[in-house]
Length: 110
Length: 113
Image (tube, rainbow over all chains, first blue to last red; front, side, top):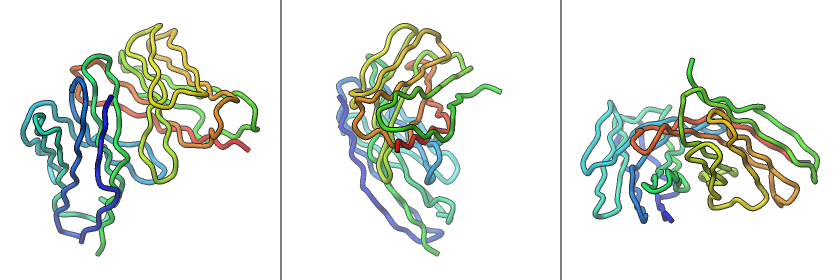
């Protein structure tokens, strides 16, 4: 199975940078996903990492270290609309099982 | 347009009744998933399927049932055995293990009264 841990809440100021950490344990790793979810809505895809290193996509970047079972999502130049829950998910290589962490609620303040 | 569709968006049922939530995708994806989300919490996996006519229990399968008779459809039945069925239910699909994104439907909010 997979144990996925991420902080419950984070607060940051508009224009600043926030880093959301995710640690996981899995028997067969086949990729780590980050999703954004606004209240009452479905999650939307942000990033995917399967190899070690940094993936950059505009203001958002995601990093993976498979040996450490660790990832982070970096949000730069924060905007008010970035206030949301950010979900870390890990996929298992044997059966496609996709498991999510409990999510990190990010609040952006003016 | 290709996508994943859940219906209905809102559903009300009386306690003790079974209810089936629909999930259809036209993305030709092999894998499909059902999650439950309670207020302020993350997604918990109910059932998943990686191929037609096959599915596996997730972490909270008790009180739920599924079928995968067609590749594009993965309905979830919430049975009367589910003790606390009121929640937001999300369906997702993924092409295969090489695919880099899992797509979500818009969710069904089930309220049992």
